[in-house]
Length: 271
Image 1 (cartoon, rainbow, N blue to C red):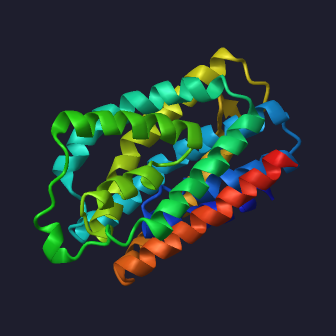
Image 2 (image 1 turned 135 degrees about the vertical axis):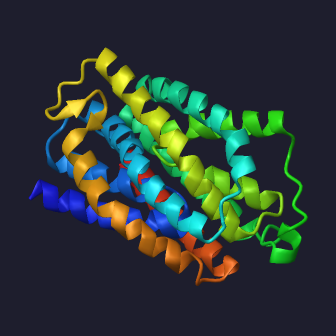
Image 3 (image 1 turned 120 degrees about the horizontal axis):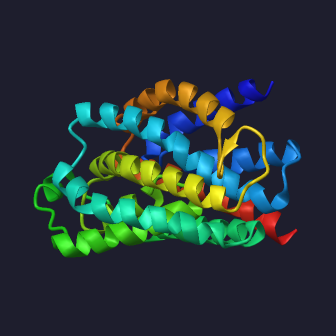
């Protein structure tokens, strides 16, 4: 029964990964939080397990989503290369920071963050919705600034258990990158974030000697396998849908998803 639940979560997460370039983390974290709670795990470890396992599964979903977006020519590889070192280092360090924060505070932090991003996408995105013509003349920050931005995105991604799309997509659209290319590049950036973050949560989780079966540190192995298997396939479907929708509609759908998840975490944390 548990495996079936993890497969269902994987199907939903994979579709979200391809559609929004978020690695599926905004779906995986709240659903795993619910499942781990029902499984009777310690409240002190549930949120950390959801975050660590989410990042581990994003390794698979980001590969599938990356391949689909790359076929559409939507990945800006020079930007990916500039962001990657900061993303990897920042995400590993972010896992260590998350390990020192209580589960309750993590819920509130994640909820507030997602609502803030949703607000920016809803009301601050009109000037960011670029046309393909504008995208050709996009001027992004210098390499050192992109490296620094990658570090910030990496730290935040570990704390929020996401593939970085919630920050990478707004970061790129802010500088005039068309939504489809922002999503495609974000999907690529999810890979170094996921690998570094998963290793970080394993390492720092083992330091705290987490007493939960079938885990390595803060990564649940069965959940990782079940979610990864299904999400690999559904991410391709999500990526196809992303290239059918208009940039403005895609951005609003993305913001709506973040609003729902953010409200959920705030509700749970304040109860």
